[in-house]
Image (cartoon, rainbow, N blue to C red; front, side, top):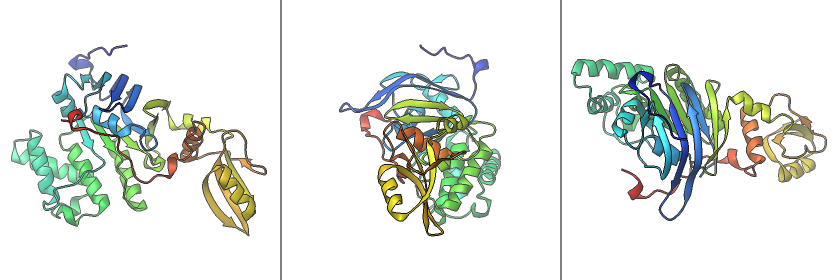
Length: 324
């Protein structure tokens, strides 16, 4: 079903995708019949490496033209209204970098000028506001090459926000960050997601945090789940287990099941893991599975038990003919 064009008065900060398909030169099918509607708030796009997340991000951001289907950002078509889409949207790519010899405020001033802010005073005020919003005020005059990894990611968010977009697309934002920086980044996403749509693509469940309103799971190029995190947790009922046992039996369980955590307590090995068909002998079902455990249980049922173990996103094939 085709999407109806929205009138200017009806536009909302949303992403609407119908029947999306993308095939790379050479025949690799990256996306197949993707249907997705995303309203305001923080929404997580979750999936294993190679699922098609980066391709979907690039299509949404008008960097790749889809093979088939329709995508609208706040009512604007990504094929026919590219400039309008780009005016509504901010993008933080996975590999944001560059500007190493420039100061933080210089980077943002240049990008603000490129986005159309011609007034120097207005631009100065906007740059200061964004720097404060992402928590970089104390390093505003520091060169980018002197920033920590977490600060560079926050600068990436700042450049995506400089033109005050209604929709923010963030691709694998915490790759390479330490645990404390990841926590700070999740809080930043929660703060700025209160008055806009944020689509955060990741293969790390913990990146989503408590502020995530909805989750969409992408696997093998297709959306296999969309709904509140609580719905995904409900699907894991009876499939996440805990067991305290000997080292020998623990090794047997680890060989047969996907284990989430392992600890030693009082001479026993305590395991938490997910089961597709049956729990290990002597194990008890966990009453309140975590979101990560629920995700692993869902994907294990699809034969994808390795999904939560990766640290770096593998980009889908690209070709210069596909991108601007």
